[in-house]
Image (cartoon, rainbow over all chains, first blue to last red; front, side, top):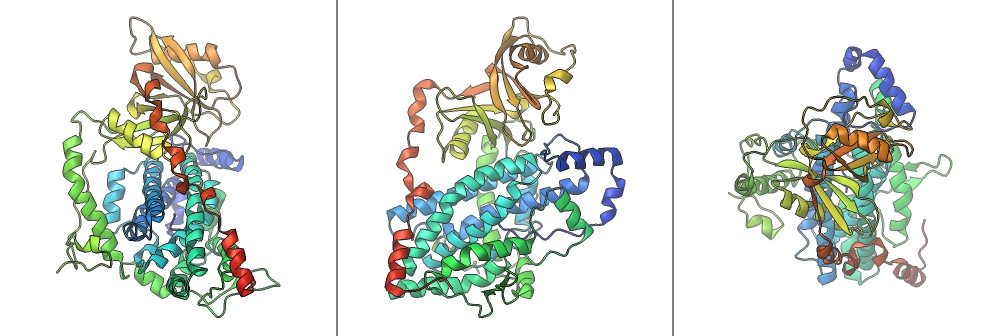
Length: 328
Length: 211
């Protein structure tokens, strides 16, 4: 799963002025030809910086995103669901490992990324700052948050950076099960007893707000965004991803007789675009900056795991070890 | 005061509530060294690069690579190589053959007797390196020259990895049964989830239609 909605920093755009024009032209020509960039290639600093930021946030989202669902493993109804839920959580943590390695090839160490996550310097997908109150919430996450993630990841897999594309190909293949598993769980509840229907509807109501913010605010089209699109770092705008998600999943929610808590949600027959109530971006900003229901808990859990495991890692460390960053 | 959570397991951790001082930056090598993993999808297929793992030693790297890269998809063999032990050529453009641009140079280190080296080719940027074959040589550079004459002429190669065979930790033929757990875990496959019947039945009973 993936926290989409990358809000790219509007850094000083004269970054590019300092780059060697000949090398920059060669780099851009390579991308224009449809070739991938590999770690040892020359690349503009802006490209490197934005990719590290994006891949690192993606990795953090996987590892933090496994927490709300992990909570429900022991309480999942029945053995089969426990095993499936556990397999899904294991996948997510594995995805974090793949992504950390992809970011490492660009020069940021895994130690530094983990430090920045725990100290709040790097972000992860904001939706994971909300709690999974019931088993039904966990099902909504498995289905709809993963669905959103897949929309994002399929787009990003076509991006220009080789190691990120390779990681995403594997991740997308594994996620196919998550989506079906989540859908199956939601259908089971929605077609079950009145009590089950009520639970899944309540969870959907709680999660719809966060889901609508999942892809991030509308992109401001700036030279900056244009450059990142030309370099195939950003593959689709946040709005395009949101529209695609609504197109694919609103009908699947409605066919179960569930309602979506937004009276303004409808597809405009003329434009073919979904219309909806603007998500609460003030709340989004407040939560992403630390003031959400679960921010403190998520980071505290991650930090405790790191701190309590530290002695094991120290004991295992070979004194002659030498760090070499991953090759690809 | 400890942090209150909905999750009883989190409550049992007795995590501190409120402001906490920043964590000290992690030390170098806290996450260990890196290894590169290659898998074999089926008998007779070439070993293909799947990605890196971090581990304190080769054996643990093998274990982690098995979990990370062979857990979900068919696999009958796994190789693990310390990243440090892989020599990498420059990357060419797609469609080029990097062997053509390699210039003969004097190796800095040479063994007295020829020893086996493994050669991996990247055919296209963004794809994965695959095992091209084994050559005998007294240095990495000689191994590249040998590789060029042995399998350098077959179409584009944009990048080459060269490794001494003795630096490759390989899964053993007699341990093959370790890969047989995958078919038992059908609940990890998308195909195990069939919801259409339930949805159709529900729709018939309730006559809802997608709005």
